[in-house]
Image (cartoon, rainbow, N blue to C red; front, side, top):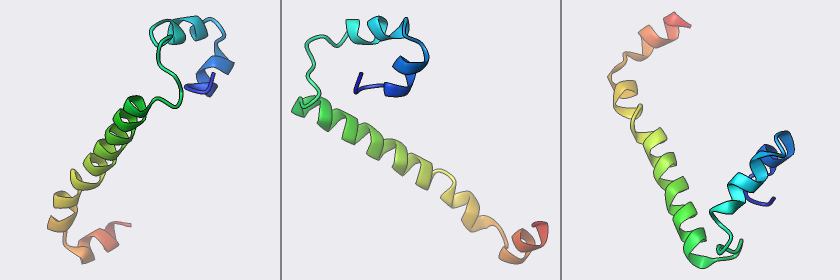
Amino acid sequence: MRIVPGLTRESPGARPAIFRGCHTVLPGHPRVNAVVIALVAAVSLLATFVPAPRATRVDPMIALRAE
């Protein structure tokens, strides 16, 4: 229930499906924590650096006028 609390509360039938594949993984498992941290860091870096080149090519005055 700690992994996906919103999903398990909204659809109780999804809870067994979620936990069936991770019965050997404990919430404090270091490898799982490292993978999750790396995944979140990668997604946040992509979300930051993908739109950045496009934003640097826009003229600031045109962007302000568009608002």
